Length: 255
Image 1 (cartoon, rainbow, N blue to C red):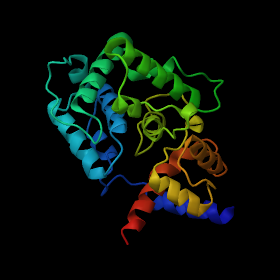
Image 2 (image 1 turned 60 degrees about the vertical axis):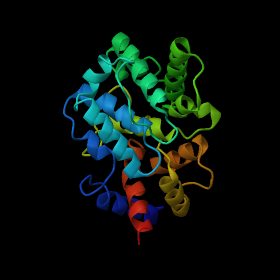
Image 3 (image 1 turned 90 degrees about the vertical axis):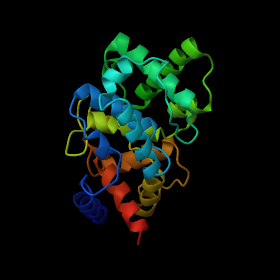
């Protein structure tokens, strides 16, 4: 246990710097306004699959399109706006509908924080039920405005009760809840202790090697198991190890 604690803290101290990385978080940090950061971080999390180069390309396209004012752009968005980029199996139509949906939500709630808050309860042991409520509500909004969601939209809003690790939603929550040189800490109503680690292939692989999980298939249960084991080393902020473990594994892969 002590050996693993030492190893985790060493990785954390060496790989928790945003400089000299191509992580999409670097683009989010270029914005200054809280509203801009929140909506752009959400979009960044939605697009956070595939190669880092692909992700950064589409995010840079959106920043250019919105003139680096994503909140204003979404609040005034019209389906007449031409979206001329796509991302893997997100079509241009998926992205247009997503931005229209966000416009509807922001018009009613003013921020994603206010919208998400209605699904959170202090009685919840983790953010699992909040994510489920959030995603189900958005999918219901989508059906009401556009009909049955296609594959791309469903992929944007996975559900933990269906086994998904919900990596992208957990990543967005990490950015919004934690507060340090990496994460913004805007959402004060959720304790960092209730976050679940965003599990991608890098986190799954290194967590298995370190003994943080016995599972080999990425799932919500794997994410819970890894987080529960990290709580043994930091019960108040177990997800703080996420960025460093992921980038440690990415860097080691190159050598």
